[in-house]
Length: 98
Image (tube, rainbow, N blue to C red; front, side, top):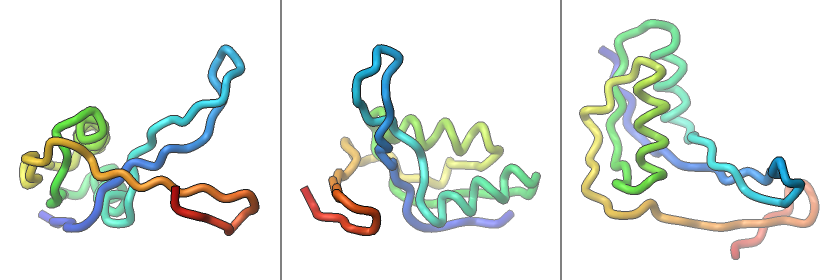
């Protein structure tokens, strides 16, 4: 089994709702997380080791891992909430922390 150890995160990407309103949609990601997903989808026995929150964001991450065939039983789920960092930019490549 290949064990991937590293970050898992949620990207909040700007989208438009069906009602035409601006909104943000959560997408699972992170470099090591994405590597585990790719290996799992290729059919290789893969596990992911990291801390995952016990809130809805952690649920999204566990769901994506499971659907991709990645064993997430190694993950620590003691964290109550997902850490959050917000950044925005007015031009491509320009970001500021909010």
